[in-house]
Length: 416
Image (tube, rainbow, N blue to C red; front, side):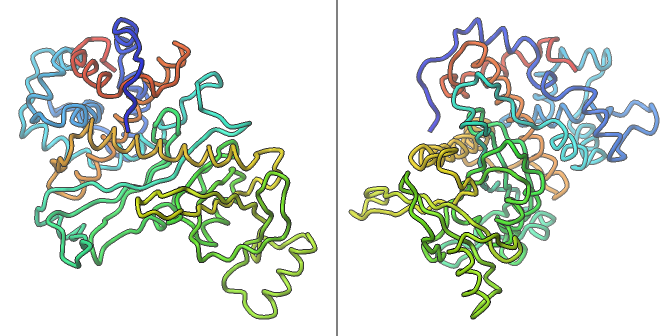
């Protein structure tokens, strides 16, 4: 849940906001480069809305989810004046401009600008030498237009019926302390067209950084994906399902134990030989088996059914001196910061239960990238302000910051 404790004084927050929220974290240069890179640069000067204007307009749509096109444009009147004196955009003109832009520049822009924003002195940002990151998924409801239904399909419900609206799934890697999304992949979530969490996450693993410690829930683990993420050199701390075989090779002093993961395609005698080699602590061929350390702990009555739930975490940090078991359990709990970040985007920024406004798949993807970019910019603002004030970013309320940003969106300092 969103923290609602101590907040920065209004003057301090306003000072940071006056620096220009969206443009200070998503620069005009970066926008122009993304537009050029994706082949969406304006071909001629004919009075149409310039692509860089449309990029910021799409981000502003995420900031003003309750408003129509012309109201959003009016909220940015001070900025629009800098982009062309006397220009009065219409809803139809803005709609056509969005179609011309497409989703590609927004996706490329997110890829270029989204990054971890916490500093070494930001509270709760690091564990040892690792930056705390998390992997998780969420879904967006979209308009049930013919094009969206054809592209995304309808997801099934728990009782086997079809849901009322198409959905898009997003898998993101967030920085835990700032809630800033830094990697993202999107795909359909409807029955027969669904792009699963593991499939989308698979596209993100090659971009993990060696100084990250990435937490993930049990739905993300499989042998191939663990190896792909492990090969990046990043620290990993993933929960696994109860049916995963984790033989105890050695009990360690911090109450964790050394174990081994074996490629599930290897069976019989070959598997037994690998297990013997692991027990003897011999080097293992990475394509066949990998050492892990296991941290287990009980959560009493988590489901409210009077039972304990056993959490089994695996990590590629094998030396307990680098990451003792009890602190690692605390690190895994930081994964819930990702849930907070998702709630900030979907509930406080977009609005609870709100359906995305776009009626075609290309603009749906464009709109979601706009939300991710805007959420990144606001999260970066909060984290930077909190670090400067010497407090944890959770102590600045997201909803209050968004309200302040909305009130000051027409400030000329917003202009790119």
